[in-house]
Length: 169
Image 1 (cartoon, rainbow, N blue to C red):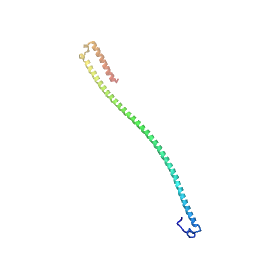
Image 2 (cartoon, one colour):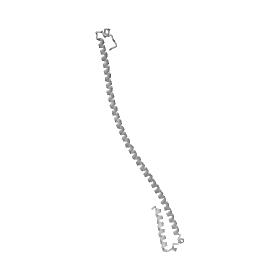
Image 3 (spheres, rainbow, N blue to C red):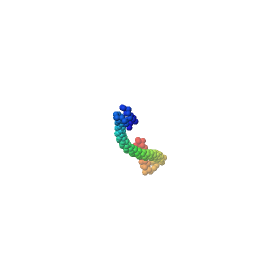
Image 4 (cartoon, one colour):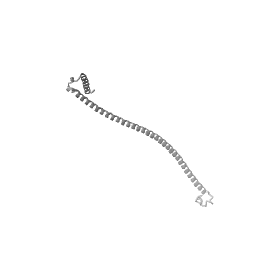
């Protein structure tokens, strides 16, 4: 009941009042409370609806984020696998390059060795020519025919090779 115990129209105790004004006021007050409660309930329902929509929106965003995360993870794994292959290929090429470098170094060493051997052979050929040219004091007629033919053949061969080396052949 209302805290007001007197009728606002006639001023009597509301228990004794016959004008029913207090009842109309009480009904009006209760109706206002009901309307306020109904309005409050409607606003709560609107908030619930909005919250439901927001929840659905957030769930959709979460699903999309999870999908994006999986796509990113797949792309990351693919890139990682590709990088691993590239690095393995790089390592193979570095190993191959090291082997080629060793082979090149070995070939250079062998070529230097061959040049040294060729230089010694050339020196030996020159020494042999000096010795042959000075046999019998440079007079080959003092030697037998067989020796003269062999020495002439060797001499002609030797000078032919010197000539070829001079021509760059």
